[in-house]
Length: 333
Image 1 (cartoon, helix red, strand yellow):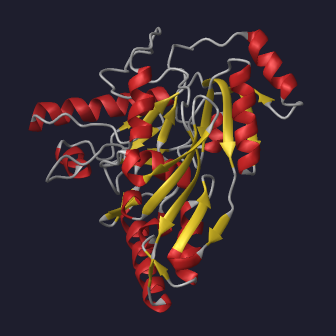
Image 2 (image 1 turned 135 degrees about the vertical axis):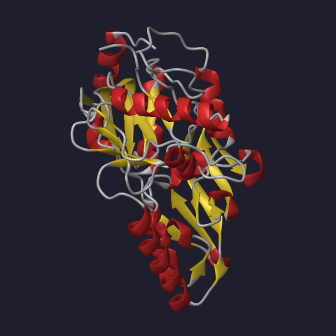
């Protein structure tokens, strides 16, 4: 998706110099991978998020909202248009176990705050990187529970720049997916570009992905629980994560688990655990996580993705489906 320089200049002026030019997105992703953004602006409140998104749309500049950067792989050529780094992080505790969290709230922070108040349901998120907005879009989950288990309502900014309140039923939650994620991918599958070598058969190939719906906030319905028991459960989840997942710059889970199996087990059984291409490596600790050994490029991670897919197809007759999203511009640099 090409963005005219005149539109970018107009947007930068409209934002009063808040937008930075060419900020490297590897600074904002857990994998420490990602090229430059045409423009990047940080927001710290819902009003700010809504205003910046609306301003960009008024001058026809596509937007991409970046939360914790935990479940995306950004192309080496970066992201066209405006990247909005979402730091809207207010949490409200309401009557009857209801919790309203802005979309930039960090998941472990939300989990800790709920546990401290004896509210049960989000313990699974205690060690999960990312934000509430990303969790809603991708139906994030762990330890047999997910976002859909407790979310009751979500506020989104629609493509018409109007705020809409969606009940959980309208979100179309599925395994690591939602209507929001499916809609964005579906609109972009027809995009054309001179794709970099190695992007083969990806259902989430996005070029300068434009966010049609911006998640503003979510309301969760939680149950009362014993604080000490919740803290113990959270500690066990954290210990399990430390024991089974790689530390440092990484991305995962890379693939969705096929029914009745685990993607990590398949990749390991295919003999790929520890396989390295450039500075990207399939983790030696958990084969469904890919590690940046230092200065890895998106194209190196993509080469590993394709290798894992090919081996799984050859050995087991299974087509591994990405759990992460590929975002940004993947044309050759």
